[in-house]
Amino acid sequence: MNIRILWDAGLTIAFGTDPYRGQNETLSPATHEIESLGKILSPTEVIAALTTNGATFLGLSDDLGSLEPGKLADIVIVRGDPLAELTDLTNVEVVIQGGRVVLDNR
Image (tube, rainbow, N blue to C red):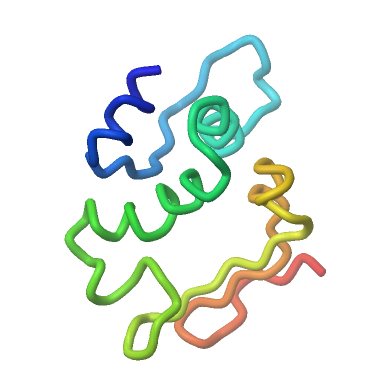
């Protein structure tokens, strides 16, 4: 609940992973973090924490964090609809970094 209060107060909430030692050891740290954030924030807010807010937190929002002209255009393509099912963010199909496909799970 504190994260909701902080978000609503305008603090920058950015995504990060920590080693997860919980009941479900099969979850990756990213999946656990996404599921945890999704219990408090909307899917749109979680995606912002993963992208634009992360760049802002690192002081890099002029260069990355969103798809805009003049910014680095690293792209992660997922299978599914993360706005409908947030954990679809972990269904990574393709990663494009620096204009090159660096992961292709299609």
